[in-house]
Length: 63
Image (cartoon, rainbow, N blue to C red; front, side, top):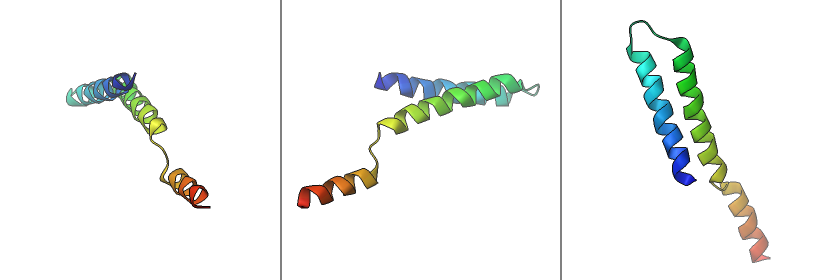
């Protein structure tokens, strides 16, 4: 499932760049590529633990 997030990011970036290259830009394709890219980034960021949570856990362990 982890690789799916990376695939979303790569596909979203490629689609957004492809839509931007053409002289006759299709705004819907550009927006779709950016949305797919952001979904991938969001899904990856959900799995990264917060530094603040780690500090709170360390303080609770020390007590």
